[in-house]
Image 1 (tube, rainbow, N blue to C red):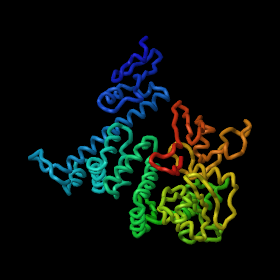
Image 2: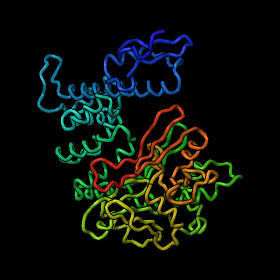
Image 3: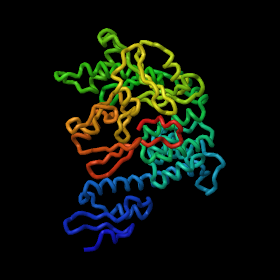
Length: 438
């Protein structure tokens, strides 16, 4: 029997006598392109074990990113094309190029415009992002998220911010990239960030959109993030109080019903417990003092401008808010306004880890379970050093689905049931204070 390690990259995969397909050695690191495409065409997914399926999944994603980069490159080149009669190019993109793209690909006008804008920014202003997409380091959604986030910055600043994000983008979700990009953009130009916030706030609106099923989507757009967080917290708290063993509705249905009942007056302030929603704010002491304009952080939302952080901290509104004052990125003081704080032990754990620590999860730690890394039955103490925030879904994944994790310094390494490892919790690249959640 031929040794599987004798396979060279690009050779066809083969099967062992038992029927299990053997992947070529080095497929995990194989760069996208024609050779990888040829290998992937030979894979029989039904004959792969769980570990190898995830390896192929990653390889397919790299290849798809590579093709997405090519599609963006063709879009951008099309925008500079003059006519069918010449290969010449115009000095500026054709203002009607999106119409051609929409017609050719059966896109809506909005989608064609959005995709073309991304393609042009990658080509003309963000070559490093385009290169990362072509090499499979990021996918099209991440490339678009980075492009959109830095679109209002000067080109040099935009490329600088994009470079810092790219340093760790391959291991981040689109949501995490968006939060990190917002923070970096605020640090890069606080005045511009505040101006953009105020301009967006001017556009706040309530929109009801009917669906094909006869229901309606109700959206409140461009509202203040701290008010949105307080409203969401109140709805969640009331919904959880109604989620008894005799309640037939799911928690999502309860949240929707509670929100509508509050808006229509069927649920009053007193019915809701007479308590406003909670706001969980992290902010530097130097920012509160007005010595700098570093962004604050609202758990569940992400970075906000210094002006918003100071405003929330200064107001003793009806809403309870919990705050963490940091010095050099480390929690220095944790507290609440107007309400008795929760147990100091839980507050300390939540201050250290602001979200569920599962890879990519952004559930605020205030809404998470506290998992005993070493179970109590095994002698594990109920102390901050042995407690880690996990949302209910990922808490169950640890105890019921075979996931496990180890903590080392600021890193958490998860091992999946298929044997792959995923590391989270690294200090963000390009940030001196490292205040991003794990």
